[in-house]
Amino acid sequence: MTRSVPAYESTVGRQIRQKRRALGLRQSELASAIGISAPRLSEIETGKVLPELVLLRRARAELAERERMKDIPVDTSARRALSHPLAVVRTERGWSQEELARRIAARIGGPRERGKVWRWENRGVVPDETTQRALAVELGVPVDRLFSQPWPTWLPGREGVDVDTPWTTPAAVAALDSTVGEALVDRRTFLTLGAESAAVLAANWPGAEHVPGAAAATRDGTAEDLVASLELRLPTLRSLDDLHGGGAARSVIDAELRTVTEVLKQGVLRGSAERRLFQVAGELARIAGWASFDIGMKASAERYFVTGLRAAHAAEDRALGANIIKCTALLMIESERAHDALVLADAARQATRSAPSRVQAMLAVRQARIHAVLHDGPQCDALLGQAEDLLGQALGRDDHPAYVNYFGPAELTAQTAACHLVLGRHDASTRLLESAVRDQPRSRARDLTTYRLWQAESALALGEVEHACALLGETAPAVAAESSTRNRARLASVRTLLRPYEDLPAVRDLDERTRDLIA
Image (cartoon, rainbow, N blue to C red; front, side, top):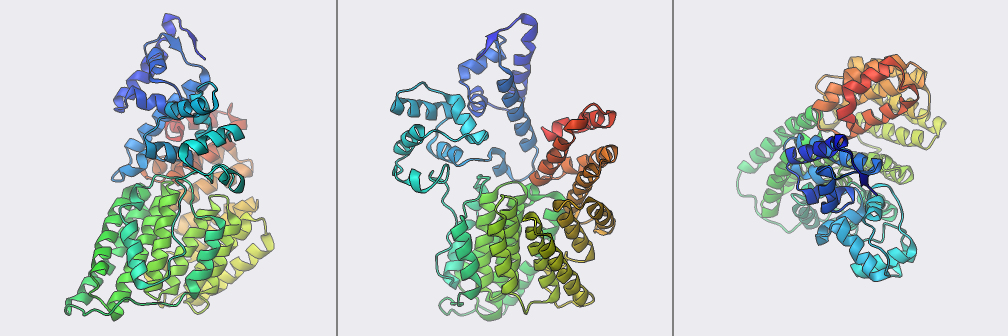
């Protein structure tokens, strides 16, 4: 509801209009995003009415998000994230929130309430049964599905990755071919891999027998040179992601994965050259998945990860597959599915008992992190002890694959600190994070930013408010410079913990420095 506006208050509308135009947004786009009609937004912008506070907050939040996303380099697919399955349904059908509300109202005979659609998509509100029935009929979904699958899992648009196709070389190439490009533009910020599918993945990946493709002749001796050149480019792509974040890296990585996929589709490589090229494909898919995860595109991430797992299986490289499973497990953790994550992490560890010690240490730490999230301190501590012993055995040896080079003493210290932070052992996490920040290579810029944000959270838990503010202030420029949605979310999360101290000068000063970034 809106009210008449005195002339002096019309500046609010003008500011919204100026910002919208500066971002190149149509009036209808902004109106749909905040759950009102374009004519009503026009009234607000021209000063005829003043929006209620909730609408004003929506408009400012949407404009701030558009401002943030326009500055993300290279990867423009992240600019219109779909954070709810219902948003996917609407987008695929070309419906605005207003149009969806109209269609539902026509079926149930009630008023058209576009604000409800906005709340379903942005506030976690669940529609009542009558509304869900009407929506199911409108979408052509059997109504009985509402009783077997809770909201919003019954909605179309949640179709996830294929875990049932046989683990053959042709199937791996087909998965790569269908993933590159398509996964890049998948804007869903939720997971599609259900608990049952995750369990199938954990069970089938390590036990599936490798089935090669049909025999074909290698063209000439240049095959080895081609594979070697592609292998040499992997460290550069890892560094791009480490230094600048997922938004800057994923388009480049996906393009490289397309190149590798096209070579595999030709079917001209066999033996060690083919296995090595599948290893390259698996690692590229993992990096692309990690970059997608970093900017919040979870459905894209899991698709890259599962495709990478198929490539690793075709390469007969269990350690590579386990590393991809480890990344998928973290995706599950941050989606509040720790039990599913543990199923995956345990499978990865079990399948790599003969892997190099550094690989085993890395996987043990992921298990420890999950047990920390599950509040199982003793098991977490036992696994951290195993990881420390295994890493000690690995130091000075070079028998591990290149993608695990990052996992050294500094990374073990940081991950141990993360476990203590989750378990509420803030003295220990503070001490260990100081060491991790000091020792971590500066080439891992995004991880350093993460660890500094953890430091601020740990300091705040110990009551060191001014120190936490100082750490956040020092870290904010790095958060702004990196295209990492996860670190932006961490900054906003720690800032939320400062609310009880908003009257302190240090907190007010921090707000001035970080307000636009957090918005």
